[in-house]
Length: 385
Image (cartoon, rainbow, N blue to C red; front, side):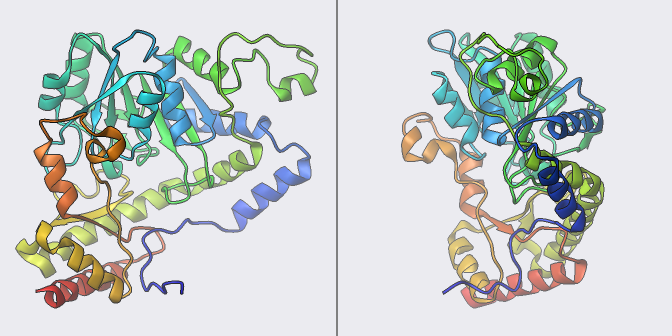
């Protein structure tokens, strides 16, 4: 039987504009990568302030291409330092390229982004790149991280999959444009969606050229070019992939870009409400992540950290009360596929994961809904005692 949720974890914001954009693409007769993708890339580059934006099939493809363009895995023994609190995609792509993921701890359970001090400890002469993840759409400590990496000439890949079009006051740049290359995801649960899809952003002309080439089998021309006779043949310059995005999804993305500022603003206001209500209704029983700066990110995720001994029971009671919740994320270094990669452990990451609960967050909610969710959360605590 399908669960009937009173409050769902996430919902996309779609309407007539998206329907018309996709229908117009279908009426055009051109569905694969073409003119709408080019417009999507140009608009996204302008919005985030990057020299180049390359649309791809999903966020994992973005990470794969970013790391490959930086020659990760080209030298035996290459390592990529990255947070263990992240979706597994970056670690999997590191392994796919023949490199070793080296996991670093987070700052704290209130700030679950890469710890600059632990990053510095994990860097070796084999470090080829560093992946930084802007958890929940909140900026990692980029000035410190960039200083560490620039001093050692190490490339920085920003996993900005939670952070579309988020300005970072500390660097006066958009997240995803501070390091060497940034990666975005437009999966259906993200702030903006193309159902599946992603984007790579960079100011490096050579990196951009390599990513564009590898995106489509290493070929020198695309189907759209050959359709218009520019030219009729092609060469293959590299061992590439099929990571193209189609114009249907790019049409959807163009419509979503029009909504994105309002979506991000709404989520920030909901995050501020969550932070107030968690403090008011739960007191010292929980803390809201990034509760000291809830409006400084895209608020892709709403999360609290509680006593690990209570976490699973509280989640069960939340489900019984109709509130959908999740866990972002189990530490990657504890997965079976990564067994033995971090024998010394990562105390902050492990403590965070044991006590974290992801709560509903999407722009279909309002402040009354947030207050209601936290009321039910308090009731779940009471039922679990």
